[in-house]
Amino acid sequence: MKSALKSTILSVGLLLCFNGMLWAQSAAPQQPSCFSIHVSLNGKLVDGPQVITLKTKQDENTVSLEQGCFKVPPAMLNEKKIAVSFTLPGNDIDIGSVATGFFTGVWDVELEDKKFSKDTPLPKHTRARKACAIVFHMGDEPERGLSVVPCRSPLPSTTKKPLAQSTDTIGLGTRQSASDNPAGGGPKAEPTARREPSIGI
View (cartoon, rainbow, N blue to C red):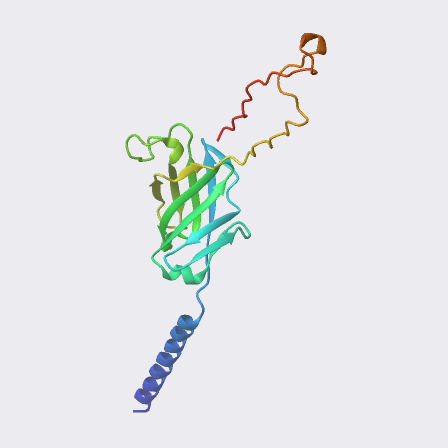
């Protein structure tokens, strides 16, 4: 009788302890998810982004690289998907919406100017320069691949147009001497057509 009572008390104690551990785990605040982005262009590794933009239907955040990874705000992880975009030298990258389960580990973003490998599935007649191929590495889980079109677009040129110079200090055409102008009245200048410099974009 006493042994049965002891067993019952021990079982109840273990159950209460187990429930307490579960409550403590659920009450703990959700930690931010961390992931890194590696970028290659034409098969060569290039500098990845230092800042990215994360966007959901409810929120938008700019996240900077910290100790090699980007930390996703916990509130955004409550959404099903998060859109990711960033800039690289000369390129604007917009990956679009990605399921929140992929915001861990390493993202390999592959860019090509001419042609992707045969292992990268892309729609027919897709220009390689506009596409991105992403491989997700998430610990022990199998690698996942994603192709995004359109994803890559050139950044607008930041070249400034030269300021127009005053015609009061710049003569137009060819100067003529007084001897070339029999009618007198000083030298005359025949204006020539001016062409504004074109700026490539």
